[in-house]
Length: 608
Image (tube, rainbow, N blue to C red; front, side, top):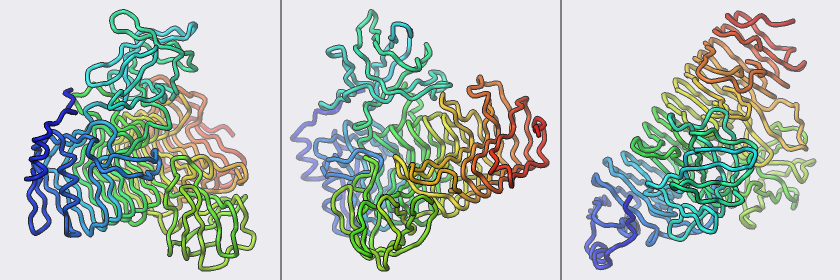
């Protein structure tokens, strides 16, 4: 694809002087694709806005955006790498922003953050497409493998990709001077379906050396725990410290968001990221590789991600495919008490390196105290003030006195910033990781969707460990969905997987999640595991139709269809199964006390 770095200086100055846009008294800005680099025009238009109500109207066409004249700002971006970012659309402190794309195609180049939206009261974005001219990926077809000698032969993709072999190392994406220090996170894909290969494992690739072979073939000398199959496509996205530059949309501390008919073919991080934002609707949006593309990966990370949001979140009639992480993740954030400063003030710390700088709380927020060893939400208090020490530590002063037995190592959860969540009519498939990750105590409805997942399709994992993503769910309805070809990772998963991950100081057997209903779903599966649950009270599995298929070989034949540990009040009834597995139900002594299995058809007879 044509590299559009060169810009005619005199032409650019002419456009900046006279404008490829017109500004009306109503603060409506009309923009046309009239420059080789639209970045300075968009920047000037936004900076010149004098009203708090802004409307950007794009004429249909292809708009190219370079990083050279982007707004630079040090940015805290949760679940990404913090740092100085090149921002194309920086929208702050507006009462309302409307962006009408009219089918415009935004084509980005290099390290840019397309949209950063902060402290806006109303945002509407409609009808636009987004892509990169060159993805930040390395991709190649596996031609041969020698597990004994430890090498693999790869035919690298060249058209539309950027890389070079130098000093026996692959340097990619090799754009504007930036390269990843290693191949890093690497995954095998099925070439025909453009999805993760059956039984594939994540790996971090650091070849000892890369050898140039005849006919453009590269031999990667590297011993691996799991080798890709010949014919598969290997895709690398670089190392952990650098491979999440920025999402396509970062929306922070804003309210009343409506996104419609937005298609993202690539992004240097997530698709849509929301932080401390209230009331969000994503309607008829898409994240997937372009149908004419030879790529197998769309976004580098999640399609959608919600961190400490509140109000109502709705994702409807949308399609998410080809990402390198989850379809959606809805969660809060745990912080750890580092010091107790006085009877009303604590110093808390963020824990994960991709959470640094995240705004955990503000004055007026209600906070739950969670005290070791119990993971239960215990006493509550209201924030009076927050004093930021640095990007890791903050001092929080509360209106009322702290619990007398509060101690270092206990954790806090923000009660105020939790959303209700609804997903309906969506398709999520052909990507790495989970379809949905859920962690909100408020009402959650997942209905009438089509799911296919590499890992668990629907995943519950609040954790006081590693990611420190809260929290326990209390009201979840999963109904009338179609699950087909799920949990095909090399690591064992399940269609519905409930598995809290708590630090070693917490009770590993105490109930965490509650009140989950998994009803009237259609399931077609090549493997055994349907529901795998730990530490849940009130789990109903009813009215589901389960069909065993022979579309792929079983990966974990010893797993049971229903597997429970440390659970209470589990009911499995009126389900129908077609297939021949005899591994139906496994439960520990705690789970068996109040477990009911009745009026189910087609399952092997349970052993007493």
